[in-house]
Structures are given as C-alpha cells and as structure tokens.
Image 1 (cartoon, rainbow, N blue to C red):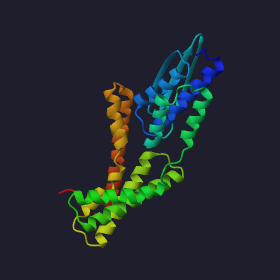
Image 2 (tube, rainbow, N blue to C red):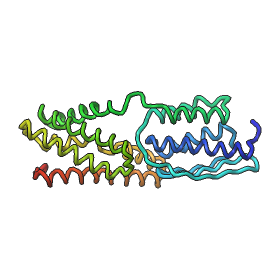
Image 3 (cartoon, helix red, strand yellow):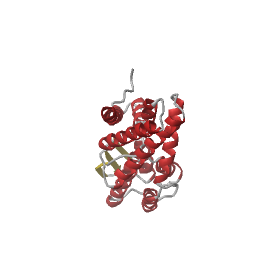
Image 4 (cartoon, rainbow, N blue to C red):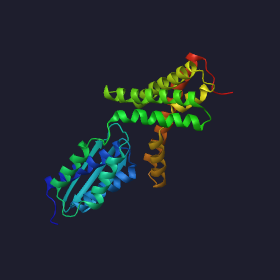
Length: 260
C-alpha cells in the first residue's frame, strides 16, 4: 500500500478516534478500544501508532513516512451497547481486506446510527421481571415479587425519561432512580400486606448495580491499564454510594428498617 498523504493520515486518525469513542460510550474496556483502533489504523496504512485511551478521553498518533498526526478527543457519557461493540470488533478483525478510508468511514457511520434491535421501553418489563425474581431468590414471596418488580420498572422508566430530557449526570440519575424504586417497592408491599418489605426494597434497586464498570475495571487492571482500571472502579463505587443515598431517603421517609 502506498504511503498516506497528509489529508489521508488526518482522516485515518479521525476514524480511529470515532471508533474508540463509540466503543467507550458503549461500555468497552479501554484496552479493547485501543486494540480495535490499532487494528483499523494499521490495516488502513499507518506504519506506526501510539494510542492512549482513558474512560474520559483519548490521544491517537499515526505515523506514515515523514507525516505524523496527533489528535485528542473527549469521549462523552458512557452507556451499554454490546451490539455496537461487537460490530466494531467485527469490523476491525474481519472486514478490512481491501477496505479504503472512505468505505471504513461509511461502515463506522452505519454502526453509529444503527438503532437498537428492540425499543428502549422493552427493558422496563425485562428488568421488572428480573428484580422480582431476585426478590424470590432472597426469600420473598409473591407480594415481594410484585413490589420489587413495580419498583424496578419505575426506576427503569425514570432512567429512560431522565436520559430523554437530557440529564447526563449518572450519579444524580442513580439517586433519583434508587429513591423511586425503593419507595415504590415499599408502597406496593405495604399495600398488599407483604411480610418482607426489606427484601422487596433491596431487590428493586438491583438493576442499578454498576456491573459493566466493575467488570471493565477488573479487565483494565488485569491488562495493566492502571489509570482506566482505577477510574472505572471509583466510578462504580460512587454509583453504588448513589444507590445507597436513594434507598436511605426512602428509609428516612418511611421509617423502615432493613437491618437488624
């Protein structure tokens, strides 16, 4: 492949940053984002790459002959979209034979704009059923199942609404969702005379547990990416504290005790 021109190298770095940003915003570990960016950059003609990725920003340098380009980018708020991560992984590993900058750019844009397979509202009954099942696992019965399901469904609906109106602070959103879930679970279980209200309250907020940040924190730490691993671990800790604050508000309002 002939050497890249100044403009082509600039486009290449921009594509790499787009891919890294999409992966981080979809919940990928930092090391996986770096690897995917590197595979794409090398396949498209870069002779040497230097990439540094954190959960909140990236720096990418591409070198080809005497030309060199370095750019930085903030990543923005993160979420969870494993289908997008899988599509970008597939692009970097199986779809680059004979690819050009233009074709890869087009493919990345398609992945970026690809809608989810199911509408967002379908997560409401799904998490409701899951948290209700957790209430049963914890020792509850039908009233606790119904109460936890109602609380979890309300929390997920509230999260979707907050996202829709533009609230990007995950900590405030988590406090509000935990408060709404636990208060709803308390109300429903009290109304139908459940015997284990505390189990319904606990199960109703399990959907808010930051599982993806915890897992990616461990992945990054095991790959010796200490900055990303510690950052994600702290994020998970603060989100867990936010859940606790929301539940504590419910306990304060209702006078419920969930500990002996």
